Image (tube, rainbow over all chains, first blue to last red; front, side, top):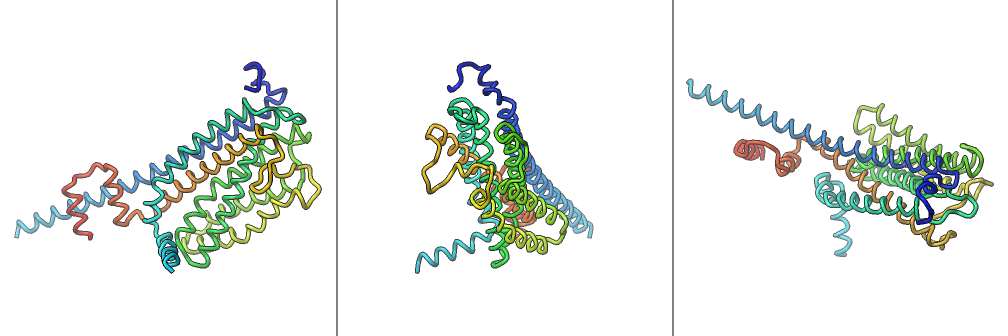
Length: 73
Length: 268
């Protein structure tokens, strides 16, 4: 550890504000990039799943009506 | 001859979205885990263990986030330029996906490099902003990113959008050597390169090693982000294809297996 105490670590030799603002903004950028991309991936996958499910439901109901029509004749 | 054939085969596969999606599955995890490990180590080292600079004091610690952000921002732009070139020459679809994936991260990292540069400049140069060769050429980089972003938002036709952004990305790469050599060409306040692959670092090891770790961490993070974004774009573009449907079912989608398999047979 370069600093003698935690207070000195926070103070950064009078440059504390600059150092912490720079590191804070960096963390903000990295974390928000990560979470935005993750939520985008999840929503894309959820949308595709939903599309597949609704297509399957459509086909299933289509098949059912065909069967019904067949039994009637 | 055999190697040549292998390379050719690889090149063709590279254009296939499905193949890309499959091989990058593990890469994303690898880059993500490496980024986390490197960035946590690097941040702690840079903030608490690296010695202060004898002239700049502790404000020099800003270097550990400023330099990697600027390096990766430029690399992502080079990536876009290369992808643009390949896209224009060979008309691969995946290259446009790559441009779209590099763009947002490159843009925010350029902004971050400018911002942390200003925050570092205040205690070091005495001002937030200097009309200096490197800051101005980096500002131009930001405008290039914003321009291509706006261009992509403005063109609805996918092919036209791909060609236009490939062209602008490629042309804009002339700015990259300008950024690089700006500290040599012009009289400047900006300090010269703190990081070089070919020369011995000018700073002592205990200052330089945490920088190396931060730079590697940023690159891994960028790899993770770009691949993730490319993968989600590939999924979106290929959402109606059979392999995507199979992939989603493999991931434990809650469907009636009998129905799902009967539909698959019908489609095949």
